[in-house]
Amino acid sequence: MTTTAFLAALSQATRQLLATVHTEFAPLELSQLNQQPAPAAWSILECLEHLNRYSRYYNPRLAQALAQQPGPTAEAAVGYSWLGRKFIGMMAPGSTKKAKTLKHMNPQGSRLGREVLAEFTQQQEHLLDLLARAQQADLNRKAVPVEFLKLLRMRLGEAFEFVVLHEQRHVQQALRAKASLRTEAAPGAYNQAAAPERCEATAA
Image (cartoon, rainbow, N blue to C red; front, side, top):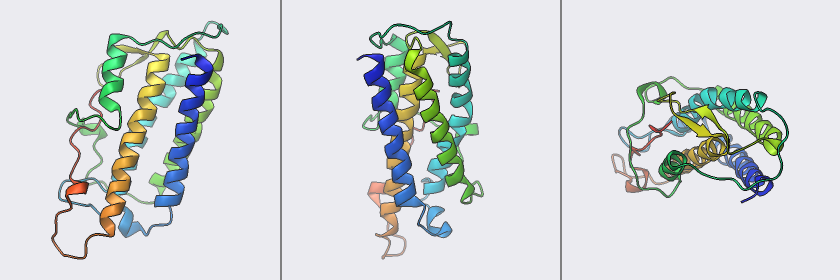
């Protein structure tokens, strides 16, 4: 895929995530946003706070990588390293691979308010700006340290894709948490569709 098509697809996916959060979650009551669908499962706000914590790490690193770009590059096909393919495959929304969430990225038990929604919007708008600035960057340059092991670096394009797929994964998880709000007529019933996800982003 060319740089232009690759970045356009990620930008469109990011805009869709923003639209989903604004239409599906913003109108809910704070108590609903904080309601856990099952024991040990994340609430809607916990899903989004998890993404905010990753954005606080990756958005500045992506910006730094773009700032260090030596100059505009010609249109080129976006390539992948073995490491990048592994991480991206792990984060794909349909992946069944499981990994334990890093402690400092796990928001469970945090006291969360609507500021989580506001920060999510801010972080995604920043990501959209970074994607626009990446149009003339070399997306195949290894430039972005992996969060959990900074000696490893992803290619710039890989890091962008990893971030967007990770966000899609957990927004889908938040949508499942919202769906459980409508199916709790029987007190104590366990909603299988909202079972806690154990694969939250150890890989970056």
